[in-house]
Structures are given as C-alpha cells and as structure tokens.
Length: 278
Length: 293
Image 1 (spheres, rainbow over the protein chains, first blue to last red):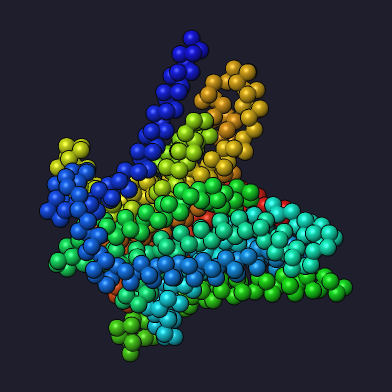
Image 2 (cartoon, rainbow over the protein chains, first blue to last red):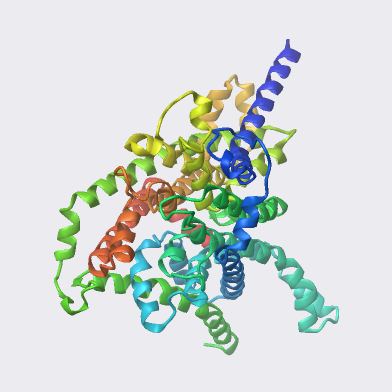
C-alpha cells in the first residue's frame, strides 16, 4: 500500500519536474530553431526547421550593426560592473565593519533607488546628456547602469560581508603576517565569492537593459544589443527580419545561459541574500 | 570624541561617499529636475515657447483618456502577472524543496528565463504567436491573429512577463520555504494534519515575510513594464503601459514638460505601491531590523 503511494508520488514529482523543464526551455529552443531556418521556411509554422542553414548567422555578422552592438554591450556591461562593484565594496565594507552616523541613510537611499522607476529619470537624463555631450556615448549608459545597480550590489555585498570572519585577519597579524599579507591572503579569498556574485548580478542588469539603451543612444556609437535587435531592419522598413533577429538572439543568449548555469549557486545566493536576511 | 572613533567615522564617510554621490547625481538630482520640468511648458521642438505653467501639465495628463487607459492597462498586467507568478513560483519552490532527485535540474531550468534578455524573450514569444511565423496557432488549431485584438495581445504580454520573471519569484519563495522548521511540520503531521492543512496553517503564515518581499519587488517591477509591450505591440490595440506613455511623450515627441508630469505621476504610483506593501505586510520594521544585525 505504502509502496504504491510512494510510486505515485515519484511519478507526480517526476512529471512536475519534466513540465517545469519544458516550460523553461520552450522559447529558447524555439528561437534557436528559428535561427537555423532557411528564409523560405520562416513562414512554415513548424517548430523545428526542415533544413538547417547558417545563412542568418552569416547575415548578422556581415552587417555593421550587430558586431558594433555586441562590442558596445560587452564594454558597457563590463565597465559598469567594475565601477559598481568597486563603489559598492567600499560602501558595504563601511556598513558592515565601521560605526558611523549616516549608515542608515546609505541603506535607506539604496533601498529607495532599488524601487525607483527608471522612466522617471529618462527625460532629465536625456536633456542633461544632450547638454553636456554624453548623449550616444558609452559613459552616458555606464553612469545610469552603475548607479541603478549600486543598491543591489551594496545589499548583496553587505549580506556576504556579514558572514566573513573578520577576526581571522587579526589572527594572521598575530602569526606574523604584514597588514597587506593579511588582507591579500586572508580577507580577499573570503570576500571574493560575494564580490563575484554581485558582479554577475550587475552585469546581467546592464546586459538586459532596454529603456536607457533606446532613449540615450541613437547610433552604432553606443547602441547596445537589446536596442539593436529591436530596431533591426529587414528588406523593407516595415518588416522585421525574423531570421536575423533569431540568430542575433542566439549569439547573445548562449553565453549568458552558460554563465547563469555555471554560477547558478552564486546567483541564487545573491538574489536571495538581501531579501530574506532582512 | 576620542581619536580612533573619529577616524572610524571619517573612514566610514569616505568609503560611502562615492556610492552616495553617484546615487544623488544620477537619481535624486534628475527626479528633482523632472519635478521642476513638469511645471513648465518645455518642448524641445518649440524651445521659444518655454514658460512656467504651474500645474497645467498635470491637469492635461490627469484629464486625458490616454493616461487613465494606460494606468488601467498597467494595473491589469501587474495584477494578472504577479498573482499568476505567485502561484506558479510557489509550485516551483515547493518542487525544488521537495524533489530530491533532479532538484539541481529544476533549479537550473528555472534560471534559464532569468538569463535571457527581456527584449529577446518578448521577441521569441511574439514570433511564436505570430500567425505567419509562429507555431502556436498550428499546435492549438486556432486561426487567431493575436496582436490585432486587445485581449489576446494582453494575454501574450502577460504570458511573456510570467515566463520571464517566475524564476525570480520562486527563488525568493524557496529561500523563505527553507526557513520553515521541519520539526513543526513533522509534529503537525503526527497530530493528523494533512498536507494542505500543514501548508496553509503552518508554512504560509511562517512565510509571510518572504512572500511580502517577493510580491513587493515583483509588483514594482511589473508596474514599470516597458520592454515587452514596446517589442510586442508598441502600445497598439490600446495596450499602452504608463512607461510607454512616458517614453512617447519624452523621447518620441520630445515634450519634456508633459512627459515629466507623467514621470512624476509614475513615481508617485510606485511610492503608493511600496507604502501599501510595507504597511500591509508590516515589513518596515523587519527591514530596518535586518540592517542593524
């Protein structure tokens, strides 16, 4: 009796697992299969391609638009990440390790900014950037990305830094390490996972953004991948080039999925750190 | 004040100063500037007509059908997607919590939507539902042109939202779920409580905080929906969200005065939503307590 129940439960959980996996990967498999379809087959209403072709991939790399956007996205994403993580590390270290008035102000402002609707600052930024010459430049996107991800980075890093056994540094000093050695050999390895987690989350935000990218750029100078893909033009201005869009999507999605899956433990820890410990 | 204490203070301020300066410069100053602009007639196409108009921009926005329609649309999208995400996210969280074999697999799968750019997710679903390129009509046996009617367009937009953001919800809920002590659940089981009773009487009340935080973040996020609507309909068939209205006024029509009034109103809506949750789930106290530990 109980054996049968166990069996039914196993079937139930197994089926649920399967449904979940199918749910998650259907659009991904769909866009991959679209990207391999020949242009004549794009309207065949089939899920899988009848014949596989790489013509869409050749097409996107022959046009100047997509390689430029890829380069912009990578550079802007990496620079924003580095800056946000450096500033957030300073702030989080101070919040966790030091006593000073105004600490709550830092935490409260970052919480407020985490809830901030980006559309509210698009107009002023557009006007300011035009005036001071940041419109359609890397810096014009790096500044808002860095700032809007600071709260996420500060909260994640604070949560991680609270777990670091800081006394080990003192112990290392007692054992004869110089301050720099104690910092480099003891503190850095302990804090590195948290910093790395914050970096991944910041990069994903910058990589994903669309609103700033279409509002504050106008050419290949600084236009990032999401904006470029949304404005891809086909043979006529009013027709979206489905095949090229699909191929470009696969090119930028594959490395991101690899990154997310490779570091899934860190991402889960980072996403939940600020929220649950609060 | 003794020396070390003062040095500590100064170091604290120095370390926080760059982050604070950036946050002030790129968010606080622009929002103040937006409030300022919203009191002016300020159209980049007609710069000679700039003048102070008081609350006239707000009067124009608040008496226009476009704003109220968009607000209604945004609320429909927010309520439908967040409530569905709560249910689905809870199911995924329970699944990840319960399943021993394949737990990693489920977690891996649910993270895939998180790693995909929203614009790409929106395009993938758009192509899937499109009568010309898509497979949905063929699979369901429909002959529906999804984006030419309001309700079907909403359906696709909401589906895309749910697909993309449920992983985030389920991870937050899973983290709350792991905080529920197993021995209480065991004790209840011994006392004869069935699975449903254990879930509703023990697990849910203990997870109130986690659910509150997850709902707060997702509601605020859903309320500012822009990417999916822009990519799938551009606001056609009366599917505009408030962020689309703001974008159209500010960037497409370069009307900074009127657009800023829309921006400020959206900002106020977000404050209202946050206040509603912080009050409703009594989170304000626990959030500040968490920071002091």
